[in-house]
Structures are given as structure tokens and as C-alpha cells.
Length: 476
Image (cartoon, rainbow, N blue to C red):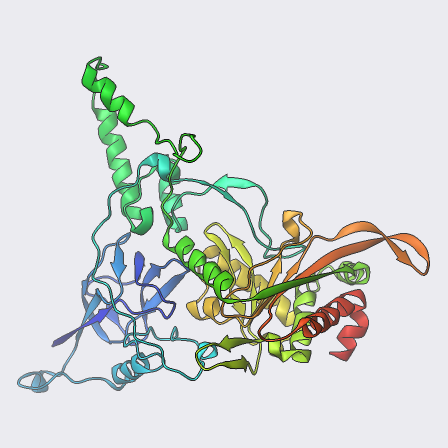
């Protein structure tokens, strides 16, 4: 019997570590090739990792709640061999395992890409990417003080009459991304914001919650100590006071390490502002007929599905907005197909997963995909391929009760369309002032791929369709 060890794979999204959320198998279980064996959570999503080997599980190399580095052993599987060929014979490699290894070598050449989660073809620009250097496995980092676990974060997101809508206002967001971790803390009677995180960037893991529960039990069993009045105690208290900011002279209320998700978002947005010479145009749209169409069929597609359909039509008319700029080769790339990204506000932050092949879908099919994708995004189960494969982004921020936004383009895309709230406003129709349903479209585009004429033309395709949806749908 030979044993094969499967390392934690590169999930194809530029991340170097993941947390073991739940093992789907145990030692002694029999597994088949491509059978999911573990759920892991990255800074972007929760995914099931399939086994490339068939046989009997001999060892699980990580505990639930443990953060593991890419390339570290994940699971060992003992392959069953016939008794008469086991002696003095090299371990046989099954066709399924050999096929898996070929899939590992395909794509970027990074050497360990997860089945079904390889580098998306839509990101290819005709050049090979350098293999990423794998970092060594990291141990647990020092715990973050409870005062620094949360920070006031403005809610941002998308959505007028949209399942992708978020909520307004500010709230304290702890550095924890897993709903399972929150549930554990809630069942134990703990405030998640009071739990120090030992994961990367202060990430709170299941192990941290269990440690906090044990600590609380120990504190409850220890009798209270008499208060100290010595000079040493006074000095310690003074040293524990919040630091003072030298520039403002104000005390720092808290310090919150950026978790992996926020770091990834910050890097992407900073790169967008640094590299893309963007311009913004906007237009007010009379959406009265579109709202009337939506209300005429309560079980029909939502407003966002109609707008998404019109966006697809606009990108067909102006395909330069559905592409990227290959700066290394000095070329403008246009895609043969549309993966429509949708900005979705989640507990972990704003994400933009894509409706794959949106150009092939009807309005009703788009509506179903949008609702399903929004649900997956909020549960953290969107695949890495969907997270990375968008070619254009639609951001519906109307539910935040704002009218417009100078949105940041989602690099390496070249444009993003924003939809504001729909309000009753005075509007002139046939020389008379009447109340109409008015919304604002704001459009940011990469000035390297086109000039204002193309951007305005795209906007008019979408705006005209929203103002006369019946005629637009008949022509689509």
C-alpha cells in the first residue's frame, strides 16, 4: 500500500493561505478522485477542495480553524494495491491522478492549481505569468488586543430593487470572515469583537473562539484579587492607556490590522487609481416605464436584471469597453463574450463576482443568475473563477439612498457603471411638468481604450433602453 500526500493547492486567486473550516472526511474513510474532502476559507470565499487521489484517508494534516499556507501538506491518502503486486513494485498512478497532475501543470504553470479553479482564460493576454514563490508556513501570530478588533467601517454596496443591495450607515466589523466562527462565539455567549485573533492580520479563527471560552471559564473559577495600590500598578495602568496621535493630538480609540480580504481590496483599488487614467460621465434617466414594467409582473425579472440586459446590449455596441489594456505588449484586448460583474455588499466587504456568459442569457435567466450569485456571495461560497473572471462591473448602490458615485474601476477591467436610487422628481413631458421616476447613471471608463464619444454612446444605449424598455426588449 502506497501513501500519497496532497498539498494545499493554489486556488488560482493570488492567495497564499487558507483556513480549514470543516473536514468532510475522517481518517479511515474511503475517497475517490475529485471527491471534496475539506472546506477551506480564503480572503475571498469558502471553497471545497477535491482530492486528486483515490484510496483510504491515512492522515489529516490540519485542524479545523487552523490557517495553512499554500503548499503545506493537507491530506494523505493510502492507495489500495493488489497483494500479489504490492511487493517490489513501484506505486501505480491511476489515470485519474495523472489527469489531475496534467491539470495542475496547465494554465499559469504555478504547479499546483486546484481542479476547477485554475487561472481563468479571460485573464490571459498572450504572455506567461511568473510562478509565485511559495512562502514558508507561518506559525500563529501574536494575539491582537480586544480594543483593536473592531473599527467603524462605512457600509458600501449596491442595489435598487436588487438582491445585491446592502445597508447604509456605519458599523463595527470584527476581523472575522467565517459565519461559523460568529456562530460559535454567539452560542458561547461571547462578543466576537472581544475575541483576540491569532490568524494573519488578526483574523479570528475557530481556535481563537475556543481559547476565549476556556479563558472565560478559568477566569470564572479564579477568585477576584484585591486591587493593587502600589506605584508599579499605577505605572502599568498609565502604560496601558491609548496612544496619542502626534499629528492631531487625539488619543487613538483603536487600531485594527487589515485582514487578507481588506488587503486584497486595497491593493486592487490602489492599482486601479495608480494605473488607469479614468474619466466619469453621468446622465439622468426617466425610468418611469421601466418601473411600471417591473410592477406589472411581480413574479418577473427585477429592475437590476433589466438594467443588466441593457448593459449587455451597450457592450455589444461598444465592445472596446469590454476588455483590458495589455501594457506590456501595448495592445487593447476585447473579449468575445461578457462576464458581467455585480457589486455585492457582504459581511466581509464589497465583492464583485461575475455572471458568466451574460451575453447568452435572457432577461429572466439573468435575473435567476443574479439572485443566485448574490446569495452565494453573502454566504462566501462564490467560486474563485467567478470572483476573478468579470469583464465589466455593474454597481447598483441605490439602496444606500445615494444618487451617484465616482466609482473606482475594478482592475484589470476598463469600465464600471453605477445605478443610483430612483426618486419621484419633477420632469418636463410634452411641455408639462409631471412627476416621473428618475434615476442617475454614472459611468467611469479607462480613457486609454476610448474617448468620450464612445462612453456617451454606451450610456445612451443603456439610458434609452431604460426609458423605453418595451421597444428595447423587442429589438434585443
